[in-house]
Image (cartoon, rainbow over all chains, first blue to last red; front, side, top):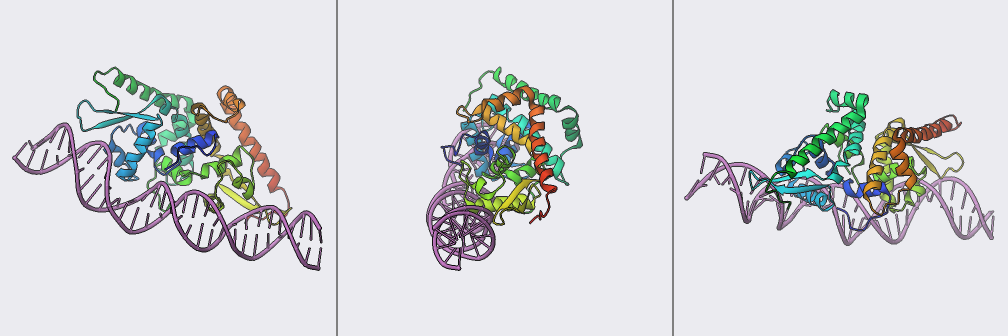
Length: 149
Length: 149
DNA sequence: ATATTAACTTGCATTTCGCAAGCGATAAAA
DNA sequence: TTTTATCGCTTGCGAAATGCAAGTTAATAT
């Protein structure tokens, strides 16, 4: 999707070259807000990403250190994906983006509780999302026999 | 770049269908953070957008109510672009995205003052960016002979 | 042993992108 | 007033990305 040499050193361009396409941010969403971890879960999202594109995006995100993957110890066919520490820093932008969409799409499917929580307690809301993922991360790291692919 | 029927009503998908490409967010950046107003100014940015793509993105953003355009009263060749009230709501996501890029690009060109201001006084910083654009908006609306195209 | 599931690849048609060139209207220079 | 330059585009076309369907391999369920 993009070449290796950045077009500029602008921080916004850096982000655009990371998730400036029609799918990457939806994968991040699935990880952060919908708790998805597996290929077929991402593929089953409403937007219906093609499996070749999904495969490509997961590879790109892994190569750039946003996510990492490992084999599911309970089913060796399965691969589990999760955000890295760097990937967790996409949470604040993601929440702001969601808030924009929820505010301006007249037919948004965003739950009212999301909008409310964002408006009344943005900091706490973001902190909660972080916390949830950080705990999932720890739980996994302390498991035995986990190998990153 | 995208069709008229949304793939889903997810608020993040709404945003992706608005600026999920390699250029749109850079145009917004130019408007919000670099104070650009004209076609040739956007075209002169570091990333070197092609003029046909720029033309397309400006039309799309206008059609979706993010920006509006008018003729420059001082030079009839020129077209001036600016954010609408809806477009102003892209400022918080944009700042968070910039903060992510500034934090994770080891060779970022983001000025230290930006990162500092963001870390020490995010709210005030964002409020300033808003204020600046709101004033520019008012100044223009009170001018005579301004026609939206 | 057989069928099913998971995570991908592969092939190929369609769409979008990106570069270069051109164009009509306006404005500046000679 | 003729010429030249600028502005905001549009057009043509090759290259790259996307999207759909089908196939593949390894592991698990029946």
